[in-house]
Length: 386
Image (cartoon, rainbow, N blue to C red; front, side):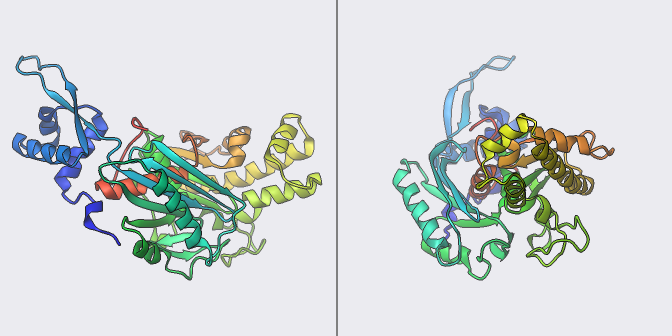
């Protein structure tokens, strides 16, 4: 059940808190100056935020040039609340319990876990129970759980999942009925973009490319996540690469992800190299040993991915494109190969790189999604805190 205590409702409080987060340490006088609120209002809001343990008085600052009493500086209380983020892959689950600034407390990874409608609630509840056991005492406790879904999500409802069968259950409602803190659902690629924006990037407009069993793009424009009609924005994997090509679960033929998703890449390399099992370390070693067949395959996949990335750059004009992929992390040369294919004027000034987060960016996006809603700060930046 969602209660109002899990959101800072008053906009002026959120504004003052955001200034404190952005500045790390700041005085009441400076807050009044940059917020355009009068000193009495700022003092009242600051007192409330201190009483509710969202902020702390930290140290004595320097006096102004005109002299006078030295100010007491204010800072964000990084341990005021806890967050849980979960990424539900089609064959894995990643989860993290953190403080509200993204500092890790407990990490949970379930590998080779098949997700379906009959077991998803049990898996989530097992993770939440473990997080609750590991949770330290904080003023506000756990204030949100956000779950990344590898499929189309709109208004907390799963509308289409090509690789697991979750679209026919009202998962959000069931979970919110079960827990006191609010539970949110969002597309995994969207969360990856939000994680990069909040925790690793100074840019205001960026795109993340999530290369997993499918291919998705998360889009942030001027600090705001772009969802699109019915949550369809960023479905780069379902853009047509080959007309009348391979059948895709979405209904199209010839979708990009039918030619260069991680599953396709792994399966094709395993078949061509006659490997019994796919092994990323083995792939990287073969590439560095200049295995002609493998190098040719990697160059082919880079060329195909570049076509999709070229399209999304031309449409969205990001400052930054970030790859969220185990393949590009293990083989960063692939990013360079993709860059080489992007030769038009629209992409020449775009920064293209691997994820800069310390772990799964969708997890950090899940933390950011809950934090934004709890603090009522839509363009939350926590780069300097985690």
